[in-house]
Length: 480
Image 1 (cartoon, one colour):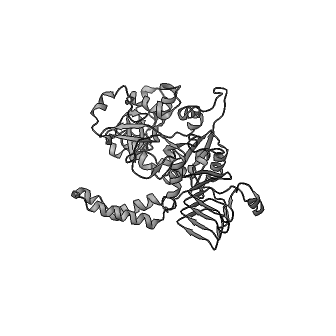
Image 2 (tube, rainbow, N blue to C red):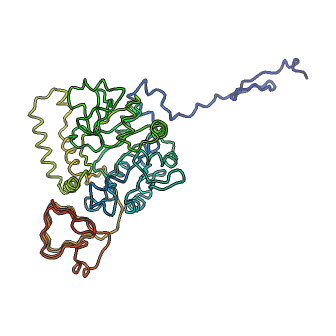
Image 3 (cartoon, rainbow, N blue to C red):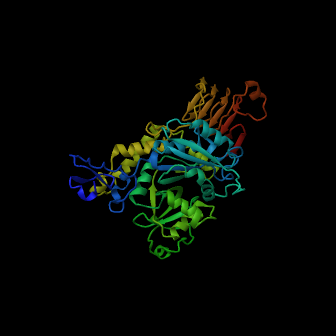
């Protein structure tokens, strides 16, 4: 039968967009199924206030890059045998635990830790403490240690160089943004709010800045910010001219210091933007804060600031480390009393109706208590390596306003305002006040403690110590 004689044939349109001749039948062609929802955001510019809701959750779309190394000289001799991120704090924890815990509590479970200097202790701690616990099905904490390759025989020359040389690992998951974090800071932040602000602004880069901290000695530069929270310039130190070729004319219009904020070293950067910055725009740059960020501003990228008002300590000195530990000894009742006084002082001011409606007594009280007692927050716990040590044994001792780690033996001593690290022994008659005893990684015998020229983890009889910092297994570090 020729095609011209097919008067009894119909042409039925099928969902695959091609014509196929079939005998005349009563056919029901099902409608094509709707396409799967796209993860890409197509209308963020039209509706920026709803942009964050269109993205997948943070545990699928954000990866954190944590730098475990700081400057080894700032906290020496605490960094003699370990990097800054591995320094013990508040009895049971390491500094890097605060940052990793922030990630876990913020539902960011893909965490890369880039390490290099004195990294043995830090690498061991990370691999043992975060081997899948509380990280979900696809969560991880992966250590990327500095190594030599045929393409690059040297070590990491800086954060930007470390990212560039680790891209083969960092690009493994198709995340949308990278959250870049220093691993030796002590603070509590909900990174999801930071990421949401980044997405709502449709920004290329979002820089966390401290809204109330002085910037006399900034470790991560000073950023100028306009009324729309857009970053317009970068200064390495106070008094320097802003480093921005494109926006330099706007700096003369800044009326007050409230448009200038110190950086925290925390950045949210779009995946493609970060890759292009370190490989194409600035392929030889080593410093993320001092080279990449000013360069991104000069390129005219959309960079926003995220103001953080809470407690934050970047451990710029032994003194800063000492005071951060002392914060952990403050009890909740003291913080509550302080917050009530602050609230009463606020109520004595003249406030508008809008300002008054934004003040909630309970919220302010809880905020201040949590800021001063950041290690005791049920909703945002601090994670670390479980060491399965016995409970601390206290025999006829007087302990006031102190934090005592696990596995200690305290006998007939007086301890006040002190952080006592794990496995510490304090003997009869000893008095310790306003000090930090780091503890030990092992349990030497009592005989070894008594005959040792430098007490490794124990304090002998009738020793009186005040404002002392004892390094882990190193004896005395510094007197204040």
